[in-house]
Image (cartoon, rainbow, N blue to C red; front, side, top):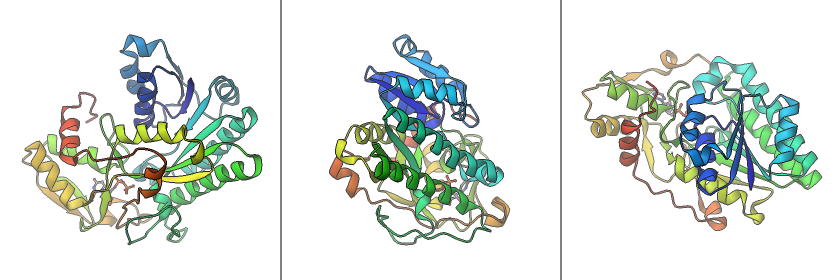
Amino acid sequence: MKVLITGGAGFIGSHLAEEYLKKGHDVYIIDDLSTGYIENIQYLEKIEDYKRRLFFYHKSIFDPETLLDLTGTCDRVFHLAAAVGVDYILKNTLTSIERNIHGTEAVLKMCGRFKKRVLITSTSEVYGKHLHAPLVEDDNIIYGPPSKFRWSYAASKLMDEFMALGWHRQNNLDVVVTRLFNTIGPRQTSSYGMVLPRFVNQALKNEPLTVYGDGNQTRTFTYVGDVVTALRRIMEQQSAVGQIFNIGGTREISILELAKLVVKVTGSTSEIKMIPYDQAYTRDFEDMQRRVPSIEKIQKYIEFNPVIELSDIIKELVQDPEIRL
Ligand code: UDP
């Protein structure tokens, strides 16, 4: 099978590429390297057997010829190219909205033209600021006002979901929508605000770990290997077409607890420093206090048991030669 991954030089995209290469498939990647890294491609190319089945196009998804060519060639399309990370989005607000909405629009149109099954990666951000747990795919969404630009990311991803489901309803295109919760693992960059790689980098340098707010906000973290296997399996599940699925872990942990765990596992001498939100982000920021997925739905469709211990993942990050300090 030939698989196209938009944003395949990114953290999750490159792991997804590896998942398919491992299974013997051909992988085509289109990535403009705006937030992805060429090192992620080079990492895959080190394995001779992967190299001859990996085709990297350093192009934007807004390049119509490349998108046309690759969508026509491939059997499956995973759309991961998007603006990523709270920090990045707050610094690049308009381009992030445009990239998410128009990028997904372009990919869906091309898939519609060639009738290719497409998986759209959305995000747990879409739920907004709920306090209850777990979050179920049919839950209402709650956003702050448009003056708080953080919500522009959630709203743009929600629009992506609507467009994808619209393509399914109106044109019978095979689409699957997945909402990814906080994904972690080797080769994740800390450059765009992601908390765990930031904490690990800070701990390894014996610098203070920066906990924003009071640290009582919680998240569940999912190992990237579990995420990409779930993406591959749900893509191949005919009954999943036209539906939305949460993909996330089940262990809820506060950010303060996470910081303590990182210090413990790394054996660092770092202190933990509490930083008020207004010093951490711009005034456009509002945090999500709690974010825990229900994974009951996806478990009815595929085998999905994300149980890897957080401390084991932290250990793996510490040993990750690719870690970007
Ligand atoms: N966070 C933190 N210190 C950091 C980076 C992030 O305390 O150096 C917090 C952030 O405010 C949020 C949580 O960690 O409450 C997760 O942040 P991240 O940007 O990784 O993802 P989010 O879940 O917010 O999309």
